[in-house]
Image (cartoon, rainbow, N blue to C red):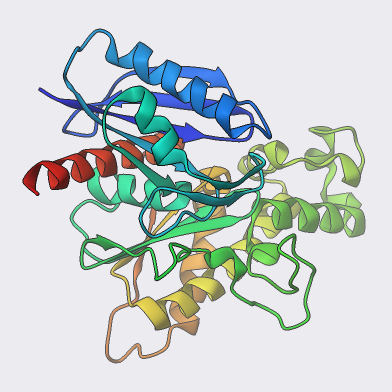
Length: 323
């Protein structure tokens, strides 16, 4: 049996896993992630790859590195990863020098989409779009079983579709991006505003924080909704509606069989997805010619990117051997 190593490089942690041919994680390793120093971070990655590979000499065929930022079309250089402080880092070349096996570098949203496509909620579907709803919105697109990267490796930045011209400012420098209305940040902002205007209905939600609308945090909202807090339920409904609007736009362009929804906010389940499904159905164009795409919850959690990166590394290794 052979293995590949998937590595998810985040702003605070590096999580790596030894993954077998079926997508199962055999073992994992975790380290703190050095910021603003790509060489140090990649040295840590090399260290965990060596640790995971040691019990299986000669059996590791490749390493997949997932990072939060655009990667060039050859899957070798990270153009920009703001949460890491990386800019134009030739990660593949630097890492291959040390680990001695082929390396693939991939955007983390693409890696997660591939993981769900091969081994999770997207299994059996050839055309899917993954939408990761966390602090912002990320994504990955699979068409005819192929991961869509675009001409410059920057496809899938769906959180920055324009939802409202001249709308709320986004960290990307533009205004009105979809993630300003359908993300975890949007959920907390809207919940605080609702709690301030409907304090009489928000007692349960407020009690989970410091008693003020400003103290409402994302971790409070799902619990409050499960306990029947109407303000929390309405906050999820509103964000779910915005989510569904964006999905309808994506469906008009990509025509997927299914959307896979992941990220921390997706853990709210139907509190988020009921209104998303209804809005997608209401806003979908061309309904006479096609069914409404399914909306599925992601299955692999925060391991999707790790598993996907590992499988992409295995596929790359097989291609290199075949050539």
